[in-house]
Image (cartoon, rainbow, N blue to C red; front, side, top):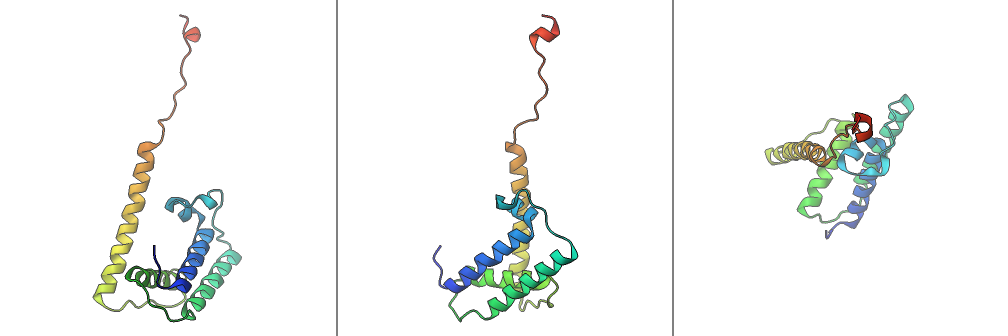
Amino acid sequence: MQTQSPAFAAWLDEFFAAYYRRRPVNATFIGVHDYDRALPDFSEQGAGDTLAEMENLLDRLYRLPPEAHTRAEAMDRELANAHARSRYGIQQVRVRGHRKVRCVALWVAITHNLLVWIRHLRQAVSPPSRQPQQCASSVGV
């Protein structure tokens, strides 16, 4: 995908890397298997580290140079910003305008439905549970 804002694209890659590292179960559900054997750190220090990392990412987002964004990049920026701010309790998120509210609500609904669809797809293609097969010799044939 072509980008009109390389600085933002690099920031977004770092945002998702941090998100996946801090939320390894979510990463696995999304399909990023780098953290399959990890669990989130919900300790006091882990929560503090996550908050500090999100604050750092937000600070860097706000200091990015002005760039023209494609429509998709503008939506990505708004959603990543809203997620970082609301999820970690940094500030209250104000989404202005009905169009943006509908966009965020639609994005959340699509993401939820996509994750449900992936779960159903995985169940459909997973091999059936194997029952122990009786050998002909054990049946007395």
